[in-house]
Image 1 (cartoon, helix red, strand yellow):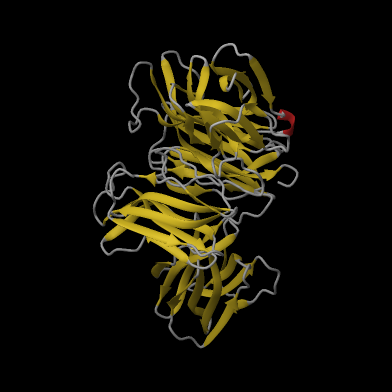
Image 2 (cartoon, helix red, strand yellow):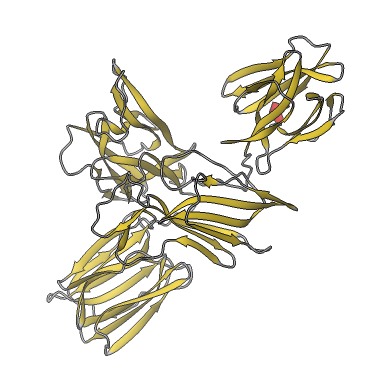
Length: 589
């Protein structure tokens, strides 16, 4: 993603060299008081591309060579133009060096620079026969540590935009229509300068509502929370391709001082579809029959209060944390003979719950095992059948579910989330449509078995078997599980074998000359999956077929020196839509 900077100077034939990885060399030709020619040497991958503008021969030609070994690049260009042709050029780079003026600095001064975008990656302008008349450029972001660029979230369609890197954000402007965000625009601080970013989204008409949030001098944004999908009347079929509220239906900017929210309020008679929730795995329920409850998924469990009457757990009260909110939910008898609290420290979380249920199918005891070493306390009496609420690959309990009746807790289960602890990393899932259900197998020691089912030319189902210590853990099947696809493929890894990368392609394979249809069933999905290990390569689909061609996007998942220790992604009842991975350093995994 690059930013265009306007062209300064006079009239002539317009040129645009495009965007490259780097500028390696500039050769400037000068005749009398004007720049008569420029020749730019660019680099793209392993290719060197040379493009020239203006007079083919000049009285004086000088080269400006950048030091590739030191990672030098042009940060800005200063120049002058007189009588509508360029009279001088000076190149300012990322390395300290003496400034050399090419030509004569006479006339109107100009500067080619993009605030927030540090690296010049291509030139544009106007020229005519024996002169360079005007000059502009393309600039790209230089992502230098400790600055990081997390992946953009939301849908898959639309034009890419980038405001670059700045010191801070000082103003947020949002326009919305119906129940979706139509446009965003940000104002930034760079030193003592204020930089206004472009408007992104639908600028062609005035949406109904405008909202502005101005941050104070010492205020900064710490996180952005959002929901992408639709808000629609209950009972009305969702139209994934319709205009009705299809887009970002909630934006929340959290700062060190406040929270600014656009949309997302619950409206009676309406419901949401799309992506926003924390991915969690359901476990259980263990015990007897009763009225079912599900507290949902939260950031954390802060406290549990257990009520005991005789030989049974008669009530439970769970205190959850979600953002700045505290939510308390209780189940079972409102008053008990004995009530005890189990309070967790700020960073402590429940890893598993051990318990027993009586032959009459009520919970008789509960014990909470946490991430912190502490004495185990048994709530109730350990009589009956033992059970453990635990999710292999998912370390943190983030919500309870179960069954209860008036005077007792009958059964218990839970939701668990992945705890991403360095050096393990979660790489973003790659593939197609975001209007799909998230899935996550969690983090394990290694992958032992890969199972893939395919139909025609797309992957329908993936399922993985993992190793955790001495245990084998079977992950769920993800994708089109409602009927058996035509072809099944299995790959079993040896004990000392591990996956280093996954290569894939998302799109369609269709007959040459036939228009492809992005919404058709015909081979629209993941059309190739390749698993590379330290010993072998296992491939599903992707072979070239005479008379067919591909459209779509290829992707690679993996990191040098790491192995894959878990999978996540998105799928629907029709196919596998996206696949992502967890990676861990090989010597630590």
